[in-house]
Length: 73
Image 1: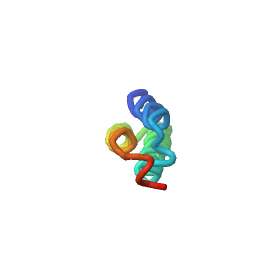
Image 2 (image 1 turned 135 degrees about the vertical axis):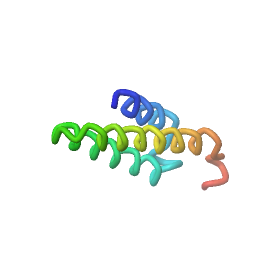
Image 3 (image 1 turned 180 degrees about the vertical axis):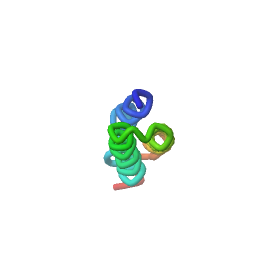
Image 4 (image 1 turned 60 degrees about the horizontal axis):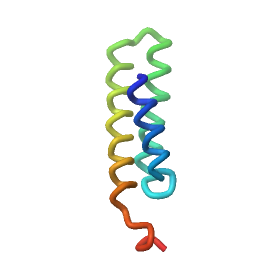
């Protein structure tokens, strides 16, 4: 889960809140789900959701880094 949190933080630093908000939202949603499942002792499901959160965060970061902010205006 630490990897997912870190990936979300990096995506935010790359500007994902403005340039890839949907992907960032999905990453955060999966992380919240993973945390809930961990507290419910559903370890396999928590791991799956944490991996999904990391994956979505990586996509958000990539889109943020490759988008051209001048074209979005």
